[in-house]
Amino acid sequence: MPASFGRYVRRRREALRQQDSAYSVRQLAQRIGVEPSYLSKVERDEEAPPSEEKIVRLAGELGEDPDVLLAMAGKVSSDLKRIILARPELFSTLIRQLKDLPDRAVSRVVREVRDGKW
Amino acid sequence: MIELKRDVLVFRFPKVHEDAKMRVDFQRTLRIPDDDKDYPLPAGLGRFPLRHVDDFAQRVPQKWIDHGGIMLPMYQSEALWINFSAGQYPFAVKVAAGKINAVTGDSWTDELHREPQDYMVVPHQPWLDGYCIEKGLIRQFVAMPLGSGYSAEEQITGEAEHGGLQIVVYPLKPELYRPVARMTRGGPMFEAEFLCAAAPAAFDMGLAPGGKMRQEIYDDTYELSDWNQERSSRCFVHICNSLAWRAVTQEAPPTTPLTAREYKNYGIPWFEYYADDAKAVQGSKLLGKLKSVAQLGKEKGDVPLPDNESIQPEKIVQLRKGLSKGQVREGTF
Image (cartoon, rainbow over all chains, first blue to last red; front, side, top):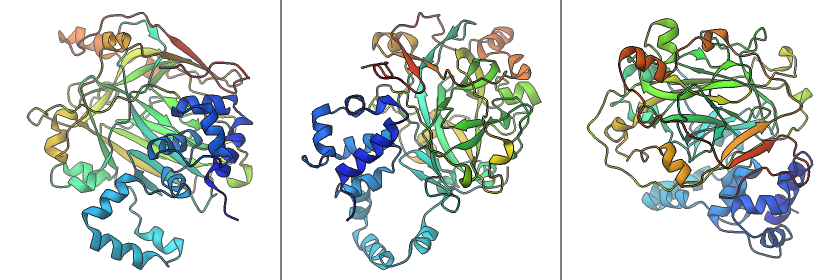
């Protein structure tokens, strides 16, 4: 069974907390700007995942990729939505064509920061 | 491989280990007074925007295209710090400004060296704010126009050739990987209130040594051979004068930096970071001999730093690696 958003967040937070008590529910909730009781409920999947902004902050705190965490919450980041909506035909075709490719093949089209001659 | 995501450089080494991911961003911050006093760490005030130089090939110098990499905008006399937000996988990270190593003052080489140590270990080292001039003390990175003579590069080599920042990252060999703790340094995030940019200016910037700040660069507790030096990723970070940013990118530059007075009035905290279990490197005698922007400006009869009055830091937040229960790690803003 794939990890739910809440379970995944809790597992990552508790792993970090083993080394650093700043990853208590209370302190982490404070840093991302939510109530500790709310974060605790989210971790138990008793509340829906928080807003995009809070998830991005959570990802930063947990050292996770924000897009991955957003996807686990069933969301797509608003900047991606803007990109698709700006050129819907082009990007919907592109995404559909890439959907069945293996990761290695897809990563070939991911734009890397180019290194040159120093 | 390095990707640029939401103004963050993401270094990934999927063939080394699935956890081998590290993020680097460049934080806007207060330029601390350059007054020979030493200050705690100022907060991060939001990320600098990062752009691929290739996207603006028609409007940036050819040498930037030759170098590859990315660019960010800075105002003259603005400061930055580098935020290493790794997960738990250790990396050796070497940073130079104008191809002058920020830890040793030596000229750039890709390889890691131990005597003296010319790199940092992330996530043990959460941030870098400047040039390591002595044990536990740095001089803040302050942007000055390349060619004005203030940058460390120009003071050491006499040439204004490279500018910008250079970063190379090496992952630990995967068989030695044990998860380690990381640290964050908070600050308020100011929403951009964009200013109208002035006419295009000479835009290649270098980083000069500014005011003194208490920050340790930690000794590597691994062996040099523990780092996988066959797998590295490096990035040239060009610094574009914010006044030219709109002409180059068609985007508004960030707001002008906060002054020390505004920083104080907003009640933004300062930080002291302690890692009791870590030893610090000695610092560089070569870098220690550099003149700060204010010192050099005085010699030139120039006033390169506006708003350089001394301040008394208030609201100092103690950050301690490996916090025990109940210790304060971040302030409330």
